[in-house]
Amino acid sequence: MGRITDFIKTNYLSLLIGLCFYGVYMYYNTNGNQICDCETTENYRPTQGNRSSINHFYHK
Image (cartoon, rainbow, N blue to C red; front, side, top):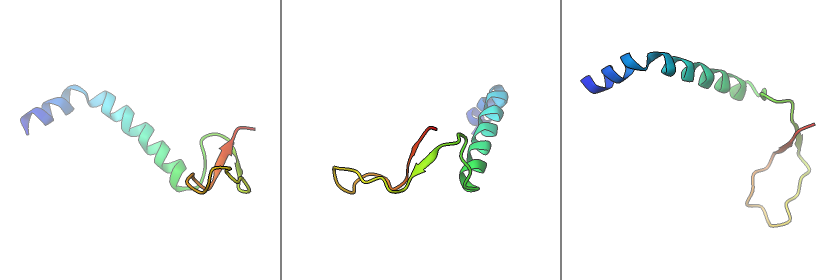
């Protein structure tokens, strides 16, 4: 347990920055917003079956 607290104490700044970016990512992800202004191709039909994801995105 002491090694974990020492690691957090020595790397608190990088952990804080990483958590900030993760928080922004989760905010955009849970609110339905996207970081880029991508358009969804809802009528996209793959030629190799239904094993891929439903919504594909492309950049404008």
